[in-house]
Amino acid sequence: MALKNGKDFLSIEQHTTEDLRRILDLAKAQKPLARAHKLPPSHPGRVLACVFAKPSLRTRVSFEVAIRQLGGTSLYITDQEIGLGKRESVHDVAKVLSRFVDGIMIRTFKQADVDGLARHATVPVVNGLTDLLHPCQVMGDILTIEEHLGSVENKTVVMVGDGNNLANSWLTAAMRFPFTFVLACPRGYEPDERILQEADRAGASYVITNDPREAMQGAHVIYGDVWTSMGQEAEGQKRLRDFTGFQINDDLLADVDPSCIVLHCLPAHRGEEITDAVMDGPRSAVFDQAENRLHAQRAILALLMA
Ligand code: CP
Ligand code: NVA
Image (tube, rainbow, N blue to C red; front, top):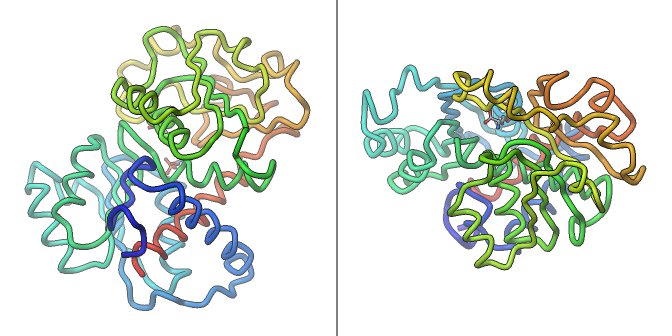
């Protein structure tokens, strides 16, 4: 087994700091080779099934490209076909897919479905986003931070917005890496209670505040995400009202250090949670960040599918 704590990548907290560091190191080493089309095809013939119950640009394309760069290939399957847990049980889907493919990447709603798939599959399962977590995104984000600012250690990552799957994933990262995570969110939009408790138990350094201005103090990274995540569309109008004052704009950034970078996992709703001026401004590293999904995930696949 290539990673110490299991055959899968379901969450960041599942893995040791050492293994997470191995992923980042491999991603850094392979990035220039992949960009130059000089990566040796280390995983010939391997097939990755990419299962999607929600839309995607970055996750789909980066996983499909990553496995090809390793010499393998991919299948894109929508959950409309599979009907995970409805047309067929999670158990049976896991058993059947394990007979056909060498790895499964899944984006769906419930974390329990991804965990269940992993439990019953004999091949690696990678979490491509659930309502609870988006671990591959944050691995790519740490890679981006380290490229721009050096080690993530002792940095302060400030997310402005919803205590959603990204906020939860940042908290899990703060359990494994010594940086501080700050979330500025409206009241009622705090992260998952269980993850907060585990962050406390693990001694993670984090702050939750309702004041985005106060949150800016000492920021090395400002992080954005949509106010309405996939599956929450019915709450869209209420969220627009509730998140008033939580936009990442030039006014909010006026006093932050010039070296501070701005990240956004994308897709962005320009003009809502972030302005064009910030997205396209000198601090923005959002497209480096998007590219790094590919490099981080290729390293995860390479280690899991070894
Ligand atoms: N950031 C991200 O996961 O993008 P997609 O939803 O397009 O995959
Ligand atoms: N929080 C967002 C992230 C999109 C990549 C969502 O779940 O829709």
